[in-house]
Length: 419
Image (cartoon, rainbow, N blue to C red):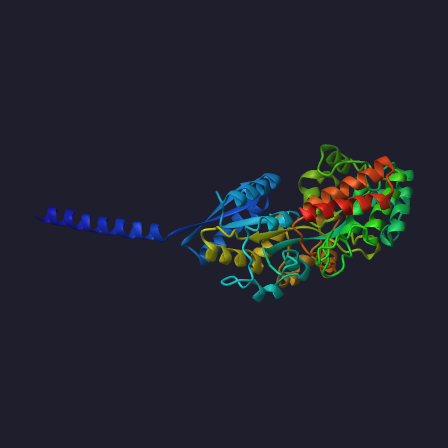
């Protein structure tokens, strides 16, 4: 009798345990986040902190390589299949994603993103805004533009940092001296300087290629100057002609065959970790020549209209972009420069950057982030970029007149707008 009572009691306990277990598992939710390489590491590192606040919500990260991720997400949006709850998008793809019409406008209830707008670097927040006013994404990190240069090559050529950065004219003149003294090219490719001038000093309310009224801007002085400078660099044989991210480009940076690169501040992390770690202490950072201010890339979080867990998705986005600790941890581990203004007074900004010879470069980049104008996103940005750089190639390699190249680009973009 005693044994049978014990067994009965044990069965009751096991039954109750199963009931509570199934109830708990029923309440447990999974949020699916699609991200590209490096950003997935940032998210995974933040999950323990997320679980403290949301123990009932698991995060499943879908990771793909950079281009594969964006292509897969475009396909998912167009077919409304395999959609994540949160979709990470890099700035240069925002226009293409906006064109799909399949992302939530975060101004609407329950998101009301405008309530948190003051928390972010102004230009970064506006990068995710369309001319219609819709806000399709929230910034997590930014890429303040910077000039990176080889201090050893400048020293050998007798060129000072001030001389290199005073103006674009002195930048090119410095390149002539550097090549004569060292044999090194000034920059990897001539279109790099064109890209700078196209991206920098964009007037408030303008996009890279289109005005808020839809007017094509590529015959403006900004583009004329960009094409002229690129042509001058190419005529002086100061560019190596390397395609960015190619093996030749990586080898050239590793071997000190180029004096300068212009990119987002995140490039330092790439140089230090896998492109040219052996060049530690030789590179330095400065602002872009001629008091130019521009941004390269940036990570944004979006919510597809057909996502299943939108409220949770919104909580996760706020967690990743408004949590100071998460933002600083991302900066330290992946060189993801914070979009959150509250993170900009962290002591980490004042620490020396070992790869840059102990330079306090993050202070420079923070300063740059305060000067960059917002760039309006247009659905045709990516196609416009292809048109522009195709025309620039004809100017550099086929001696096409700049005015004709920009006129042809304008006509092409106006045809795209009509269709």
